[in-house]
Length: 175
Length: 439
Image (cartoon, rainbow over all chains, first blue to last red; front, side):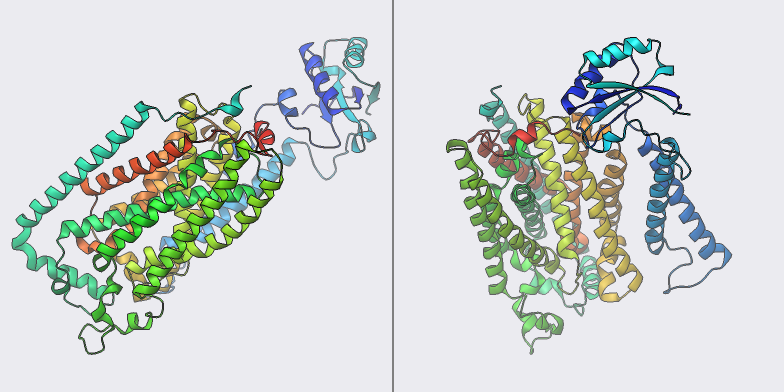
């Protein structure tokens, strides 16, 4: 996600107003950086035009890697590197290997998914959080628009936000 | 919108299709019986060989190699017919029961997403009283063929066939107590069903409100407690006691998971077919998605139980436990089905339903639902047939025929009851929430 410096921040009082505003702003061809809300707003991802996440696909492949890695390791260890008879079974007998394989599949799928999510979302321990308006943790709905990503002038976007119901429009600059 | 007054019409076209299904089933069944009788006459010369083989298997079963031929005077085809009837009795009784379980579960968990199609599981449960009667009839006529433990001579210490193990289980596995349990379970389920059904349909005509919904929720909670015990014990009685020497402590859950996942698949299938015929516009891809998640999740649950049962027995390697899988893994009839069962009930739905789209589209969900229903019928076939038929079991015209007859009758009962009431519970307190369900 590209990080801009100059943002226009619309402040809204009502979740329905912010949804209408998202629609009208996007209809005018403005790209919205992000919308912040004190609570989850159902269906907001459709309004913002978010595509379906590809995280599950990544997760599937992490799981596949975990599954094959676990099977390969157990087969190699118990079948070839250091064969041992356990419970009178063959050196390589699949059923007892399944629980470990299952666990390892889940382990890699879950951790891989979390790490990928952190990387994609630019969340790292030393990342500085960008707070557009602290009131979005209380009772206000915040819409941030990256000025560098839009052709329209600051005044035009300011007017759009004000017309679609923003109670105030502020400018926020990050160093 | 006038959706709230939508009614399902059980058209003559649909009726004709179901009658055709049953007629085809009867023809298949007759063809199967004919082929079996003809085959038996042909194989009469090899009878000695067959007896030795089945004696082997009985010896496996811990039966001390008793002479089966002396006590079993029933013809093979009749025995096979009892087996097939029993498989379908258990399978379809489970589907009807899952209808009631699904309904009550939605009340107990206060779920709202499912309200739009709640009338379908409700209609499915109408099969319960019929299933109970069929169970009793088939059990009464086929008990000695289906259930080895029903033979009197096993408990007679003077008899050479005295079975100490079964004598030890006599406190539980005896004819009167077995029948009491069967009547109690089916009677209990039916009474719960009629009580809940009365309240559910009263909602359509009487004043809307939450008072009735709360009453249904309370009785649903009682039903689920009863359901938990009764399905588990029912599974021991009707399926596990076919192999009376063998036992598995998680068998009750295993049978429940098989019923539950096929029941969910059947609900999804009926929803899809109704939607394809222009009904249930309020049930959207979002509702279907959640049903699909249920089916997907419980396929994994079924596989988990299947594997837990298999692996512990495989690992411990105790002869009286492994016999169950030896029967199914070392014989030509059962070995392919054993692996097919695992494939179409776990591998296929797991891979197929993994993506979001496959759960949201009617066509893909329909394929998955049909495969799962057929797959779990096979699962019950594999649980019941080897214990009764030994080396003579198989899947042929008789199995397909009886399954089609039961399917036709089950759908007839479901659809005709569905058409008697409004298709959408218009005064249900959570209907509005269901209309807005979105994921």
